[in-house]
Image (cartoon, rainbow, N blue to C red; front, side):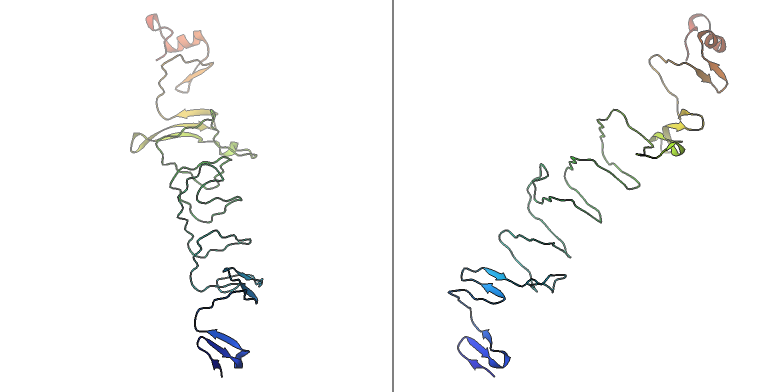
Length: 231
């Protein structure tokens, strides 16, 4: 069955398998499919690929602690939680606790506790964007609504504009909306103009069109000190 020494059992019935009952101290190199050198370096020539936690050239049933760098030439699949405890701040694309040279694909939510700096373009393909912020600064001097890069969007332009929620009270918003049927803007509330109002045509109550100085005064029936003043 086996020949026993103080720290070694040789099982000749099983191709001479050796069982060491104590520590192994190697002054040279132990060579096989896996090589162990006297300096503690372990290498394996096995090239079996890994598709799960129990396959591959090297499998470990328990945890692994690595005190130094680890270089992996292939893919890394993490079925559990990946945690990075390093707190290095990022100031560009090549600094921080985690840097990625290529792209990143995230199938679920992403929560960022600090600032986000996008040096390229930002495209949002969802159905809504919510900004819970107290200040919104836009450097571009022109904002385009109802935009599409190539399609004609005139069919959906009606009602485009700006709405201020609860402008008057909890049930009364204020808005400036485009009326595509009549090609004009509709203001939901009174417009107060503190400077001059310049127009090449003015319609009051939908029936009096004022487009010349004489017609203006005639239709308003202004005279005396009020002549020429529209209030």
